[in-house]
Figure (spheres, one colour):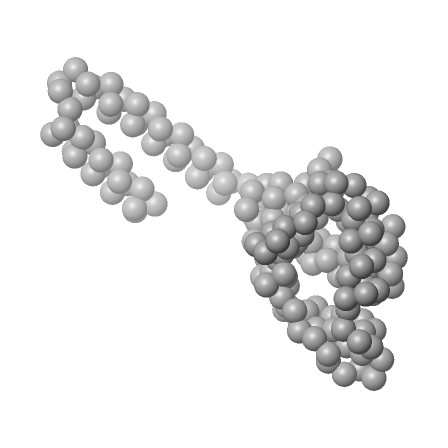
Length: 178
């Protein structure tokens, strides 16, 4: 807040020396209108329910765990229910797009049945970082471990899972493996 006040004071002083007298008034008025909008938005965010982010975090972690179980059990229909379409995979490296349920299931079958580590049995969440970017968008950075039938760790992965709220439900719309 201190930085915002400093900016609100500093910019008009700088602009006074650079504009003609008629433009000064219009420039300052426009700047003050924009500053008021910014301050109003800050106040709105502060007055929102402080438990919302925490509740969303718990919900997203739970959704991710259910998504992971669907992957483990090869329950492709359930897996597809966690997504909105189009869904994007490998966002930062050769992006692939699933435009609907069928293409998403085909993509996951290839990963789960052909490309997975030998002996894969299940995955467990190791750690996560939750980021709420707006009231209807968030992402979770997940570190997970994959285990074989002998309960030996065979892989550690990190992924970014992007969610958006659609008609009150959180859905995955992008995944990026790191």
